[in-house]
Image (cartoon, rainbow, N blue to C red; front, side, top):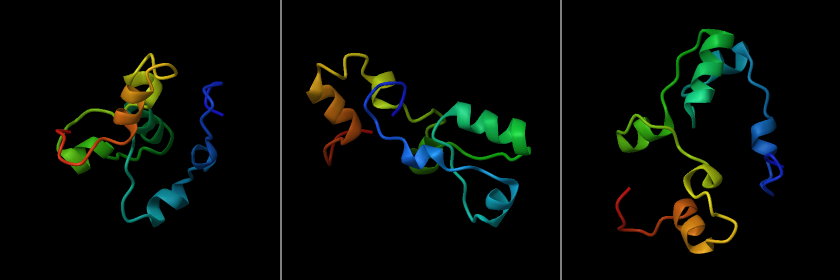
Length: 89
């Protein structure tokens, strides 16, 4: 679970290796922390998800970062997690 936030982190448990990075066609970081880790550990530069998908050089925030009241403001948390079609990015 992510810091006691009730979020399952199975995908975050994947171990990155130089072999995995070099065998991949495309590696994308969700956050600047991920970018920094990959560069510091493997000297491997990767783009941010938002840069690739939306042309914005900014990290993709987890719900608890974007909506500090996510546990009680379920509408805002839901919107951050699943924006409605047709709404601005």
